Length: 427
Image 1 (cartoon, one colour):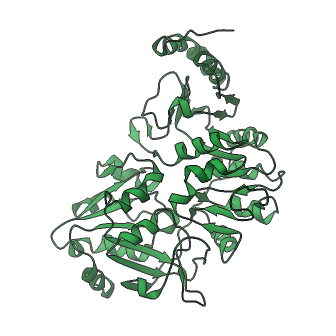
Image 2 (tube, helix red, strand yellow):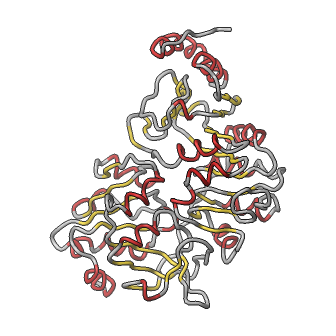
């Protein structure tokens, strides 16, 4: 075994549960050593690994010979784990993770971190992510870090001293990047509809993917926007550098943008480095219902796999396969609904591979109940469901479905509303 593997074996015990930063915050040197030497590290037993959003191919189904995978998301590079039946899904609100860790319901024995070089006070920054990591660090028996000079030193949240680490090594890999394809005509049309809803001075929360980045690109004509979001990508950095994102009109954390994780390229890392106008905070703050409700004009913009004719939202299962997550959408949608002037928005293309995503009946679970649905946006327009009865919701959602699917949805609407105890008003 390598010297690193020997040192890890001294610290990791059979039966341990391991956590690390998700997506771009994955500490590649440590995670790749873990999977390569898993047999020796498990010492004839098994290790349990929490799986967040993926940005690398580190984890593979064959590693289930010694590793038990559990997590809240199964998309992207972690889809093979779910397809192979070796990823045990945690159907939990993302905001519940810190509390579950603190309570010991979710064990956290070992935490692997990617950190920035220390500042003049010897403080190592978690750099790209806070999220659930502070809770895991607090509970962990062992904290292991890799120092990466390309990781920004970011304000907010937890900072660590060298004495907080059981082992601190130099990173051998550059940071992971979350690349996005250029938005196509459909994404651009949706983005224009969303941008038209957002007022100057609004505070933005965005989910992840190409569509939120398209929305950000459509907001360059706005003024004094703010940030309070889980994910922060290149589009946010571009808005800030253009003078559009100032955080000046925020009612909470005035003058400071709040995020949980940087998910982009070198562009967002460079913008975030030592930037006092950005703070990365833990999930217990970014998703706090009171903070969200107090955020004036909070525009929460999240995605979905499909929406039914009454406003129920599935963000987890597509074609019978778990590909999404419960995530934080419900927290943000409820927060935006309580925010003065807030906008709870779910945006999605009207079709996928020729099939409608505005459906009479969901093909997966209800990730967001109809009672929390606000504004549904497709390339064909906006359906404002707030304060609307079932029959009016059906009418508005059919109007933003793809035209070629509307007639069939009309036929199915009668049966849908019969089950829901309502009459379908054709007028």
